[in-house]
Image (cartoon, rainbow, N blue to C red; front, top):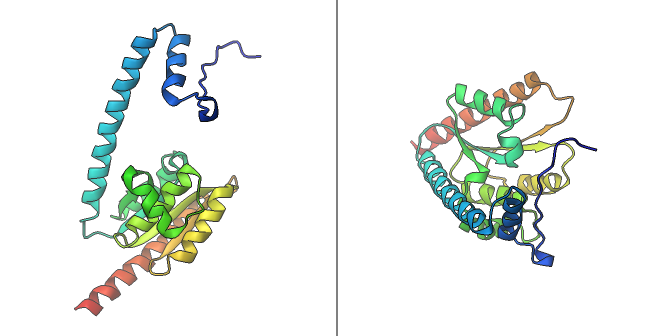
Length: 207
């Protein structure tokens, strides 16, 4: 059907097809020995861990800023998509909003933080979003949930988040083909106004 060869690998823990075995087989398909593939895999894993630690450190530093802070929560394929997450990111930065990302939460915190909101969430990215909301909700001024329509897991976790997070403003942006960027920006403008007014009110109450 396709003229171009397709590279693929399979991870299936029920048949002992682990991640490392999958990459070794992929390397073999590309003409590399298991030893070379293993070394390349371990090197990539080391670089990925270093990058992750750097991102986690930067996110921790962001929590200390006095700017309005927003947690941008969602699947990475939405957070960093040029048509979904990028316009939101650009608008927030133009309005001097500090952005924290749900996928930058330290991995060791995910299970414990997610369990504080729900013990019935089993999807990897949904657990990450739930954990980040639990961990960062008292460190940020608001939460933006980014979702694609129709995503079943998101519809469940987002509703649970809105139900649980009564002490902080939460907005859900659900993207579909009919979305206009103007409509999204209008909602973001209103949300930022709410956060600014809330922060100013809290400042006056504390002084």
